[in-house]
Length: 83
Image 1: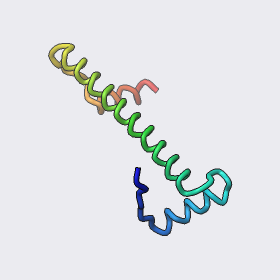
Image 2 (image 1 turned 180 degrees about the vertical axis):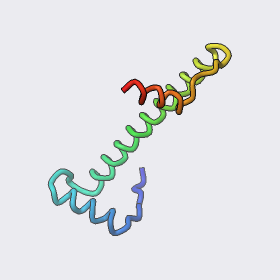
Image 3 (image 1 turned 180 degrees about the horizontal axis):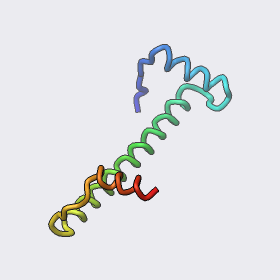
Image 4 (image 1 turned 45 degrees about the vertical axis):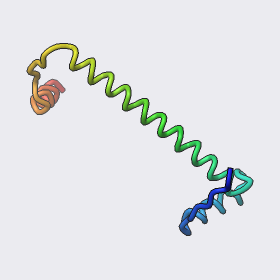
């Protein structure tokens, strides 16, 4: 694979340099690799969340016709009276 070149702003460059100086990373490639791994994990979690949300929405829609419920204001008022 052909190496990729990326452009960094000063803040990003300084972060990479600081992480390398800390000894936690051996070079810029290690820092970028770990950053991409974390981004991939974050994206996978976001995808899983969206999928679960869509399943819950589908389950709710399939559960039957909507029923009227107490407003949020009324529920809060009841809760405050009970305290």
